[in-house]
Image 1: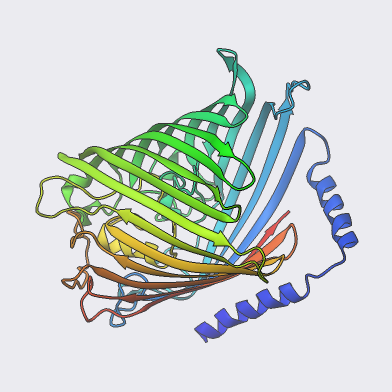
Image 2: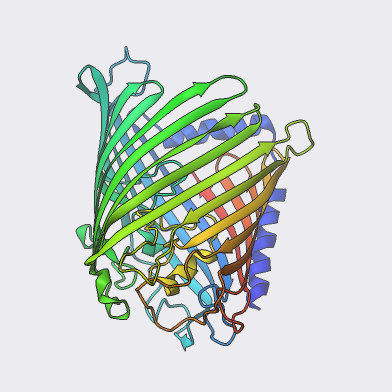
Amino acid sequence: MKRGLLWLGCVLLFVVMASSSASAQTEADTRDLIDQIKKPVEWFEWGVDLRIRQVYMENAIDLLDSVDDNRHFFRVRTGVWARIGPFLKDDDLKAPNGVSLYVRGVNEWYTYAQRSNLGRNVPAGTINGLRNGINEFVLESAYVDLVRFIHVGGLPVSVRVGRQDIAYGKGWVILDGTPLDGARTTYSDAIKATLHLDVDSTVDVFYIDNNAYQSRVEPLNPEGYPLNRTSEYDARVAGIYGMTKLYANEDFSADADMYYIYKDEDLRDARAGIVAPYRGGRIVHTYGGAFNGRFLKDGDYYAEGAFQWGKEGNLDRRGLGFNSDLGYTLTGVVWQPRVHGAFEYLSGDEPETTKVEAWDPVLSRWPQWSELYAYRWALEGGMPGAYTNLQRYTLGTSVNPTEKMKVSADYSYVRANEHTFGRAVVLPALPMGDGASRGQHLLAVLEYAFNDYISGHLWAEYFHPESFYDDSTDDALFLRWQLVFKF
C-alpha cells in the first residue's frame, strides 16, 4: 500500500508530462497573460507557488532493519510573494538600480502514511506526536534592496537589509541558515553590502544573526516544537566574499572566488542533554577560495578548498575541506551526454588528540550530494546535514532526451578519514565496524520542465554500508517524486 502510493505519484507525474504539450503560440499567449497578471503595474509584482513531494525512506537514519525508522510522507509547501519597486531609478544607468521591497511567506505541512522514530511509534499524521504544521505560516523573506544606490569612492554599492537567502558558489560553505526545517526555508537574518568594482568583479560584506528559534518573527498560528526550531544554535556570522571573472574566450574561461567567514555559535537545542558539554559554543574561522569555468569549449571544471581554525568549547579547532568536479559534454552526440568525476575531502576529528579537527559545515547543512546520506550525521554528530569526516569519489553522467527532460545517474564511493563520531556522542549508539569504508551510494534523477511554470522530478537513492559500520547494518533507500507550480 505504501509503495503503491509512491508509484501512484510517479504515474501522476507522467500524466502531467503527457498532457503538457501545447503549441508555441499557445504557450506564448499564456505567458503574456500570466505576466500581465503578475505585474499589473511597473512598480508592483507578485506571485504564488506550490511544491508537492511524496517521500519514502528506508533505514536512512540508522541503517538497521531491526529498528523501525522508515518514513513515508507527503509534504506540501505553498508560498506567496510580492515585490514593490524599484523606485528612485536612474534611467541613465544600463545596470539594474533603485530601491525596492520584497516579502515572501510560506507554509509547509506533512501527512504521514508511515512515521516511526527509532522504534518509538507516534500517532499517524503527526510529527513526534505533534500536528503537521498545516496552519503555521512563516515569514521566509522580508528585505529592502538598495541596488547601486550608494557610492563609495566613486564605485556603486548595493545593500540588502532583512530576512533573505544568502548563498555563494555551489553552496559548499554558505547556503542554508535554517537547516532543521528541511527545505521549507533557507533564510538568514542579515545585512549584505555588495561593492561593484566593475562588470566582472564584486566584493560582498555581510553580517548574519540567526536565532535557533523563530521567536524573532513569530509565525502566524505557530505549531510549536519542533517546527519553531530552525537550528540547534544561535549563530552570528560575518564574512567578506569576492568574485571575479579572470579570463574568457570561446574555448576557455576562469572565474575565481575568495572568502573569509567568521562564525560564532551558541547551543540552544532543547535536546542538549544528549550531546557532550563541550558543544556549548563554537567559533570557526574559514578562509577559502574556488575556481570554475570551461575548457576545450565543452569541458567544465570546479575546485574549492578552505582551511578552518577556532574554538570548540574550550578545545582548539582545526579543519580542512576540498571539493571538486570535472566534466565534459559530448555536444556532437545524440542527447548531448555529460560525463563527470568528482572528489570531496572533509577532515574528521582525530580521537587521540585534544583538538577538534572535524570540518565544520558553516551554513551549508543541506543535502549537497545525497538526500539519503544527509540523515546519517544526525546520529554520528548530532546535527542532520552536517557533512564531515569523509572522502567522496563520484563518477556520473547525464543526458537530455528532449529539451525539457534531463536524466542523471551518479555512483559515489564514500570513506571516512577518522574512525570516530567526534566527541559528541549521540544516543542511541550506532553499530560501528573497524574499517574506513562508509559505503557505496547510487543516485538517479529524472527532471522534466513542462513549461515556464510547471516542473517535476523523480528521485531515487540507494546506499550500501560497508566496514565503517558493523555487519548488522542494512542497505538504505530514498525515493521521491515532486511537482512544482510557479506563477
